[in-house]
Length: 93
View 1 (tube, rainbow, N blue to C red):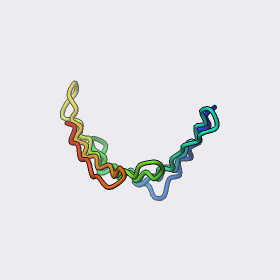
View 2: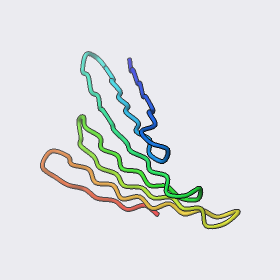
View 3: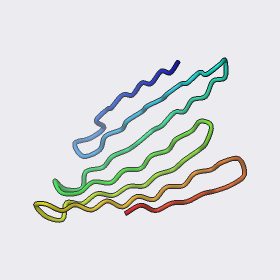
């Protein structure tokens, strides 16, 4: 069984907050997470996001998007995950 819920709230004209959570239960063992994301629109062609997730693992994500033309866009994402006593990082372009 699993349950997920999210709410999106505009804070200003250019900034939006998203709060989401999920719960899963398999054979009596439950897991879950809560995420908070802030999205800032810099122009009609670009925005940035900051996301913090807490649950079984703690994660931080920074993401940027920019429209480069009529048929091209670029994404850049930096992900950090804290698992037990380890830190793992990833970059996606």
